[in-house]
Image (cartoon, rainbow, N blue to C red; front, side, top):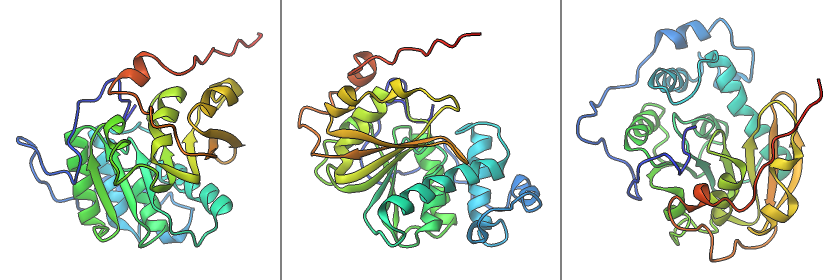
Length: 265
């Protein structure tokens, strides 16, 4: 998982700088990105020919181990799907800020930045090395004007007045278990904002119980299964001031327990 607050080292809020011992490599065309030219059949705005720096950044992120070994085109297509559901729910012209929770290698945040040019997007991660990778990516993709990297624990950033209640959208690709993701995401959201979370393939309604997420002011509103499985929750009211709890507590003492689904065979 790319940003699980139970396992990541602490960061410091603000734009990330290259830490000692991490060389500043320029993100250029990668062989994997060149191969992807023959496999992309998605939106032409982010084709390898139109957005080569994006594909190179995704290839670097995968080589770095920030996400799995699925083909690059699958990774980019999955990230684009977050934008499809957000545009459907909020309107394609929405301009409210977006936060990528536990951004890791920059998915879906970097792809969404290409989809919504100029829309404020925050890439939040707690690991200095991943933040350095993200800084390189936004520089190479020329996204500096609208995209910021914040290297901090979600529990701390969620109490920063600059970010608390400021986001219209929070996206989470592989941040952590549902109760941890909900508790770390809700403090960032405006009332009426949405949390969009990537889900496992199997349907499991017990992952987002109404009573459990309701404690945070959230309400499950939609589950999308095609082309990828996403769950959408709406921030119905402000997240209570007691959340998020201090660093590590959301993982150690989750607000609710997700029981495994027993399937007959």
